[in-house]
Length: 318
Image (cartoon, rainbow, N blue to C red; front, side, top):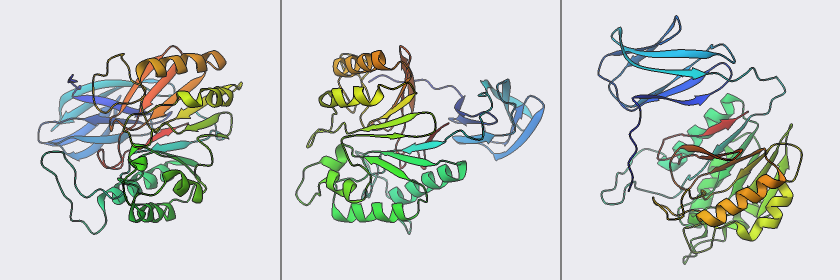
Protein backbone atom coordinates (compact mmCIF):
# COMPACT_ATOMS: atom_id res chain seq x y z
CA UNK A 1 0.00 0.00 0.00
CA UNK A 2 1.60 3.30 -1.06
CA UNK A 3 1.88 6.22 1.32
CA UNK A 4 1.68 9.90 0.55
CA UNK A 5 3.74 12.54 2.36
CA UNK A 6 1.53 15.58 2.55
CA UNK A 7 2.92 19.12 2.68
CA UNK A 8 2.65 20.94 5.99
CA UNK A 9 0.19 23.38 4.43
CA UNK A 10 -1.67 22.96 1.16
CA UNK A 11 -4.21 24.83 -0.96
CA UNK A 12 -7.41 22.79 -0.97
CA UNK A 13 -9.83 24.99 -2.93
CA UNK A 14 -9.64 28.16 -5.01
CA UNK A 15 -12.19 30.73 -6.19
CA UNK A 16 -11.83 34.12 -7.82
CA UNK A 17 -11.57 36.07 -4.56
CA UNK A 18 -10.82 33.41 -1.95
CA UNK A 19 -8.84 30.26 -1.22
CA UNK A 20 -9.03 27.51 1.37
CA UNK A 21 -5.81 26.25 2.91
CA UNK A 22 -5.44 23.12 5.03
CA UNK A 23 -2.70 21.86 7.31
CA UNK A 24 -1.99 18.47 8.83
CA UNK A 25 -0.54 19.73 12.08
CA UNK A 26 1.17 22.85 13.37
CA UNK A 27 2.97 23.65 16.64
CA UNK A 28 0.91 24.90 19.57
CA UNK A 29 0.42 28.63 19.71
CA UNK A 30 -1.61 31.47 18.23
CA UNK A 31 -2.10 31.08 14.49
CA UNK A 32 -2.38 33.87 11.95
CA UNK A 33 -2.32 33.86 8.16
CA UNK A 34 -0.48 36.54 6.21
CA UNK A 35 -1.52 37.00 2.57
CA UNK A 36 0.65 39.69 1.02
CA UNK A 37 0.23 42.41 3.68
CA UNK A 38 -3.16 41.34 4.98
CA UNK A 39 -3.26 39.42 8.26
CA UNK A 40 -6.08 37.09 9.32
CA UNK A 41 -6.44 35.80 12.88
CA UNK A 42 -7.07 32.02 12.89
CA UNK A 43 -7.02 31.38 16.64
CA UNK A 44 -5.25 28.53 18.43
CA UNK A 45 -3.21 25.95 16.50
CA UNK A 46 -1.74 22.57 17.36
CA UNK A 47 -3.97 20.25 15.37
CA UNK A 48 -5.05 19.67 11.75
CA UNK A 49 -7.22 22.47 10.43
CA UNK A 50 -8.39 24.64 7.57
CA UNK A 51 -9.06 28.31 6.92
CA UNK A 52 -10.84 30.34 4.26
CA UNK A 53 -8.76 33.29 3.09
CA UNK A 54 -11.02 35.96 1.61
CA UNK A 55 -10.87 39.32 -0.15
CA UNK A 56 -8.13 38.18 -2.53
CA UNK A 57 -7.56 39.79 -5.91
CA UNK A 58 -9.05 37.75 -8.79
CA UNK A 59 -6.68 36.25 -11.33
CA UNK A 60 -3.60 36.97 -9.24
CA UNK A 61 -0.76 35.09 -7.55
CA UNK A 62 -0.70 35.37 -3.76
CA UNK A 63 1.94 34.25 -1.26
CA UNK A 64 0.56 32.75 1.96
CA UNK A 65 2.42 32.50 5.26
CA UNK A 66 1.14 30.81 8.41
CA UNK A 67 2.59 32.29 11.59
CA UNK A 68 2.67 30.76 15.08
CA UNK A 69 3.04 33.46 17.74
CA UNK A 70 4.34 35.81 15.06
CA UNK A 71 6.95 33.44 13.60
CA UNK A 72 6.60 32.09 10.05
CA UNK A 73 5.97 28.33 10.31
CA UNK A 74 4.66 27.34 6.88
CA UNK A 75 4.42 28.90 3.43
CA UNK A 76 2.59 28.26 0.18
CA UNK A 77 1.16 30.20 -2.73
CA UNK A 78 -2.02 30.30 -4.77
CA UNK A 79 -3.31 31.84 -7.98
CA UNK A 80 -6.93 32.89 -7.78
CA UNK A 81 -9.34 32.28 -10.62
CA UNK A 82 -10.34 35.07 -13.01
CA UNK A 83 -13.40 37.06 -12.00
CA UNK A 84 -16.61 35.12 -12.49
CA UNK A 85 -19.66 36.82 -13.92
CA UNK A 86 -22.90 37.26 -12.01
CA UNK A 87 -24.50 34.81 -14.45
CA UNK A 88 -22.09 31.98 -13.54
CA UNK A 89 -23.78 28.83 -12.25
CA UNK A 90 -22.52 27.18 -9.07
CA UNK A 91 -23.02 23.48 -8.43
CA UNK A 92 -21.93 21.39 -5.46
CA UNK A 93 -21.28 17.68 -4.98
CA UNK A 94 -21.22 15.38 -1.98
CA UNK A 95 -20.87 11.61 -1.76
CA UNK A 96 -20.59 8.59 0.50
CA UNK A 97 -23.10 9.78 3.10
CA UNK A 98 -23.55 6.25 4.51
CA UNK A 99 -26.83 6.86 6.32
CA UNK A 100 -27.28 4.06 8.84
CA UNK A 101 -23.63 3.70 9.82
CA UNK A 102 -23.18 3.52 13.60
CA UNK A 103 -19.41 3.22 14.01
CA UNK A 104 -16.24 4.23 12.17
CA UNK A 105 -13.18 2.00 11.81
CA UNK A 106 -12.38 -1.55 10.75
CA UNK A 107 -10.53 -3.06 13.72
CA UNK A 108 -11.41 -0.68 16.56
CA UNK A 109 -14.59 1.25 15.91
CA UNK A 110 -15.14 4.80 17.06
CA UNK A 111 -18.69 5.65 18.05
CA UNK A 112 -20.53 8.92 18.45
CA UNK A 113 -23.24 9.44 21.05
CA UNK A 114 -24.52 12.76 19.74
CA UNK A 115 -28.25 13.53 19.60
CA UNK A 116 -28.27 13.09 15.80
CA UNK A 117 -26.74 10.31 13.74
CA UNK A 118 -23.27 11.49 12.74
CA UNK A 119 -23.71 10.60 9.03
CA UNK A 120 -26.84 12.77 8.97
CA UNK A 121 -25.18 15.56 10.93
CA UNK A 122 -22.15 15.62 8.62
CA UNK A 123 -24.26 15.50 5.44
CA UNK A 124 -26.45 18.34 6.67
CA UNK A 125 -23.39 20.43 7.44
CA UNK A 126 -21.99 19.87 3.94
CA UNK A 127 -25.27 20.75 2.24
CA UNK A 128 -25.77 23.82 4.42
CA UNK A 129 -22.29 25.13 3.59
CA UNK A 130 -22.82 24.47 -0.12
CA UNK A 131 -26.13 26.36 -0.12
CA UNK A 132 -24.59 29.29 1.77
CA UNK A 133 -21.81 29.34 -0.85
CA UNK A 134 -24.47 29.82 -3.52
CA UNK A 135 -24.87 26.35 -5.03
CA UNK A 136 -27.87 26.09 -7.33
CA UNK A 137 -27.73 22.30 -7.71
CA UNK A 138 -26.47 19.52 -5.44
CA UNK A 139 -25.20 16.27 -7.00
CA UNK A 140 -25.02 13.28 -4.63
CA UNK A 141 -22.57 10.70 -5.96
CA UNK A 142 -23.73 7.49 -4.31
CA UNK A 143 -23.38 5.43 -1.14
CA UNK A 144 -26.33 7.32 0.24
CA UNK A 145 -27.03 4.43 2.61
CA UNK A 146 -25.07 1.68 4.32
CA UNK A 147 -27.29 -1.27 3.37
CA UNK A 148 -30.23 0.29 1.49
CA UNK A 149 -32.59 -0.49 4.35
CA UNK A 150 -35.93 1.32 4.80
CA UNK A 151 -34.80 3.25 7.89
CA UNK A 152 -31.72 4.47 6.01
CA UNK A 153 -33.85 5.83 3.19
CA UNK A 154 -36.04 7.50 5.81
CA UNK A 155 -32.92 9.23 7.12
CA UNK A 156 -32.22 10.34 3.55
CA UNK A 157 -35.69 11.90 3.51
CA UNK A 158 -34.81 13.83 6.68
CA UNK A 159 -31.74 15.12 4.88
CA UNK A 160 -33.68 16.06 1.73
CA UNK A 161 -36.18 18.06 3.77
CA UNK A 162 -33.39 20.46 4.80
CA UNK A 163 -31.98 21.10 1.31
CA UNK A 164 -33.71 24.00 -0.49
CA UNK A 165 -32.05 23.55 -3.91
CA UNK A 166 -32.56 20.94 -6.69
CA UNK A 167 -30.79 17.60 -6.27
CA UNK A 168 -29.51 14.90 -8.60
CA UNK A 169 -28.46 11.59 -7.06
CA UNK A 170 -26.92 8.33 -8.25
CA UNK A 171 -26.52 5.02 -6.39
CA UNK A 172 -23.27 3.64 -5.00
CA UNK A 173 -22.19 0.10 -4.22
CA UNK A 174 -23.56 0.31 -0.66
CA UNK A 175 -26.96 1.13 -2.14
CA UNK A 176 -27.01 -2.08 -4.24
CA UNK A 177 -25.78 -4.59 -1.65
CA UNK A 178 -28.52 -7.13 -2.49
CA UNK A 179 -29.03 -8.23 1.13
CA UNK A 180 -32.14 -9.46 2.87
CA UNK A 181 -34.22 -6.45 3.87
CA UNK A 182 -32.52 -4.10 1.41
CA UNK A 183 -34.59 -1.97 -0.93
CA UNK A 184 -33.99 -1.43 -4.64
CA UNK A 185 -32.00 1.81 -4.75
CA UNK A 186 -33.09 2.67 -8.28
CA UNK A 187 -36.73 2.49 -7.22
CA UNK A 188 -35.99 4.54 -4.10
CA UNK A 189 -34.26 7.28 -6.10
CA UNK A 190 -36.84 7.28 -8.87
CA UNK A 191 -39.64 7.50 -6.33
CA UNK A 192 -38.02 10.71 -5.11
CA UNK A 193 -37.60 11.97 -8.72
CA UNK A 194 -33.82 12.10 -8.30
CA UNK A 195 -32.54 9.57 -10.83
CA UNK A 196 -34.86 8.87 -13.78
CA UNK A 197 -32.37 6.95 -15.98
CA UNK A 198 -28.99 5.16 -15.59
CA UNK A 199 -27.53 7.97 -17.70
CA UNK A 200 -29.23 11.23 -16.80
CA UNK A 201 -28.36 14.63 -18.22
CA UNK A 202 -29.29 18.18 -17.31
CA UNK A 203 -28.36 21.36 -19.16
CA UNK A 204 -27.51 24.40 -17.06
CA UNK A 205 -26.15 27.83 -17.93
CA UNK A 206 -23.44 27.08 -20.49
CA UNK A 207 -22.63 23.47 -19.58
CA UNK A 208 -24.16 20.02 -19.24
CA UNK A 209 -24.23 17.59 -16.32
CA UNK A 210 -24.29 13.84 -16.97
CA UNK A 211 -24.89 11.48 -14.02
CA UNK A 212 -24.08 7.80 -14.60
CA UNK A 213 -24.91 4.66 -12.62
CA UNK A 214 -21.57 2.85 -12.20
CA UNK A 215 -22.79 0.15 -9.78
CA UNK A 216 -22.69 -3.63 -10.24
CA UNK A 217 -25.44 -5.07 -7.99
CA UNK A 218 -24.03 -7.18 -5.19
CA UNK A 219 -20.42 -6.08 -5.81
CA UNK A 220 -18.23 -3.23 -4.58
CA UNK A 221 -16.40 -2.44 -7.84
CA UNK A 222 -17.83 -0.39 -10.67
CA UNK A 223 -18.46 -0.56 -14.41
CA UNK A 224 -19.92 1.93 -16.88
CA UNK A 225 -18.90 0.35 -20.20
CA UNK A 226 -22.45 -0.94 -20.69
CA UNK A 227 -23.59 2.67 -20.95
CA UNK A 228 -20.88 3.67 -23.46
CA UNK A 229 -23.26 4.65 -26.26
CA UNK A 230 -25.60 6.57 -23.97
CA UNK A 231 -22.75 8.46 -22.28
CA UNK A 232 -21.07 9.34 -25.58
CA UNK A 233 -24.37 10.64 -26.95
CA UNK A 234 -24.83 12.73 -23.80
CA UNK A 235 -21.37 14.37 -23.97
CA UNK A 236 -21.55 14.96 -27.73
CA UNK A 237 -22.30 18.67 -27.48
CA UNK A 238 -20.50 21.95 -28.16
CA UNK A 239 -20.53 22.92 -24.48
CA UNK A 240 -18.44 21.68 -21.51
CA UNK A 241 -19.73 18.55 -19.77
CA UNK A 242 -19.36 17.37 -16.17
CA UNK A 243 -19.68 13.58 -15.79
CA UNK A 244 -20.48 12.26 -12.32
CA UNK A 245 -20.16 8.62 -11.22
CA UNK A 246 -19.90 6.89 -7.88
CA UNK A 247 -16.87 4.75 -8.71
CA UNK A 248 -13.50 6.27 -9.50
CA UNK A 249 -11.43 5.48 -12.60
CA UNK A 250 -8.47 3.32 -11.58
CA UNK A 251 -5.12 4.88 -12.49
CA UNK A 252 -3.09 1.73 -13.21
CA UNK A 253 -3.63 -1.67 -14.89
CA UNK A 254 -3.03 -3.37 -11.53
CA UNK A 255 -5.03 -1.76 -8.70
CA UNK A 256 -2.73 -0.24 -6.10
CA UNK A 257 -5.17 0.76 -3.37
CA UNK A 258 -8.54 -0.22 -1.97
CA UNK A 259 -11.42 0.04 -2.85
CA UNK A 260 -11.66 -1.19 -6.41
CA UNK A 261 -13.27 1.18 -8.87
CA UNK A 262 -13.79 1.17 -12.64
CA UNK A 263 -11.07 -1.05 -14.11
CA UNK A 264 -8.17 0.77 -15.74
CA UNK A 265 -8.58 -0.51 -19.31
CA UNK A 266 -12.35 -0.06 -19.34
CA UNK A 267 -12.08 3.41 -17.85
CA UNK A 268 -9.29 4.74 -20.05
CA UNK A 269 -10.92 3.43 -23.22
CA UNK A 270 -14.18 5.09 -22.26
CA UNK A 271 -12.55 8.41 -21.35
CA UNK A 272 -10.55 8.48 -24.59
CA UNK A 273 -13.68 7.70 -26.60
CA UNK A 274 -15.63 10.46 -24.87
CA UNK A 275 -12.80 12.94 -25.46
CA UNK A 276 -13.09 12.24 -29.17
CA UNK A 277 -16.69 13.43 -28.96
CA UNK A 278 -15.96 16.36 -26.64
CA UNK A 279 -12.49 17.43 -25.43
CA UNK A 280 -13.97 19.69 -22.72
CA UNK A 281 -14.83 17.08 -20.08
CA UNK A 282 -14.69 17.00 -16.30
CA UNK A 283 -15.15 13.78 -14.30
CA UNK A 284 -15.87 13.48 -10.59
CA UNK A 285 -16.53 10.46 -8.39
CA UNK A 286 -16.68 9.34 -4.77
CA UNK A 287 -16.14 5.78 -3.45
CA UNK A 288 -12.50 6.11 -2.34
CA UNK A 289 -13.27 8.43 0.59
CA UNK A 290 -10.28 10.49 -0.55
CA UNK A 291 -9.76 13.89 -2.16
CA UNK A 292 -7.74 13.72 -5.38
CA UNK A 293 -7.34 15.48 -8.72
CA UNK A 294 -5.51 14.33 -11.84
CA UNK A 295 -5.68 14.75 -15.61
CA UNK A 296 -5.91 12.50 -18.63
CA UNK A 297 -5.28 14.39 -21.85
CA UNK A 298 -7.64 17.39 -21.69
CA UNK A 299 -9.94 15.87 -19.05
CA UNK A 300 -9.87 16.79 -15.37
CA UNK A 301 -10.64 13.82 -13.08
CA UNK A 302 -11.44 14.26 -9.38
CA UNK A 303 -12.44 12.20 -6.36
CA UNK A 304 -14.26 13.82 -3.44
CA UNK A 305 -14.24 12.24 -0.01
CA UNK A 306 -17.03 11.03 2.26
CA UNK A 307 -19.01 13.63 4.19
CA UNK A 308 -18.60 11.54 7.35
CA UNK A 309 -14.86 10.79 7.05
CA UNK A 310 -13.80 14.34 6.18
CA UNK A 311 -16.68 15.74 8.28
CA UNK A 312 -18.86 18.00 6.18
CA UNK A 313 -16.68 17.83 3.05
CA UNK A 314 -18.14 18.96 -0.27
CA UNK A 315 -16.86 20.27 -3.59
CA UNK A 316 -18.10 23.30 -5.49
CA UNK A 317 -17.68 24.21 -9.14
CA UNK A 318 -18.36 27.48 -10.99
